[in-house]
Image 1 (cartoon, rainbow, N blue to C red):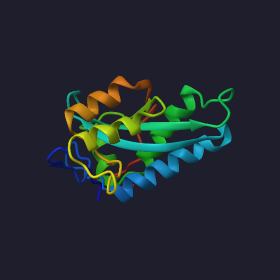
Image 2: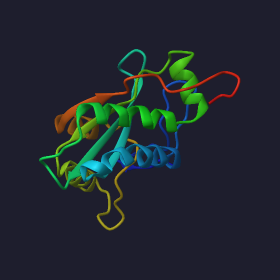
Image 3: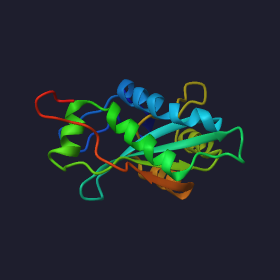
Image 4: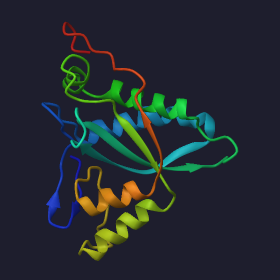
Length: 172
């Protein structure tokens, strides 16, 4: 399950409507999307997620800290937008139904954060009582100070350019 204890709050999954995305599914989606980054010698150092319900419809926000081994050849905005779509295509049929048929979930968003951001997240968690020896970056956050920190360190935002595939007959 997606977990992260920050303060006194524990979050086990992402959800906007009737969808529910657990840690394994999110990890698979990230793995599938990051395959598009390989030709740019870029990898995801760390990530977390947030169910943004302040927008209508709500949408998933995935924060990525990237390591670019060749800064002269970064992934383009188009590639990062495609990463969003690949992640959505990797989600379960309930998510895709909510996104396509019900329009109750908006396009998935990837926010790329500055290098070192997840160290700052760890520092904040430790300052609030988390054990440094047991700390693991949370895969889902909803604790306002962490979301504010991530947002303040965001260098670019990318949205899914299309809806994922979903059909009522197959559910896929």
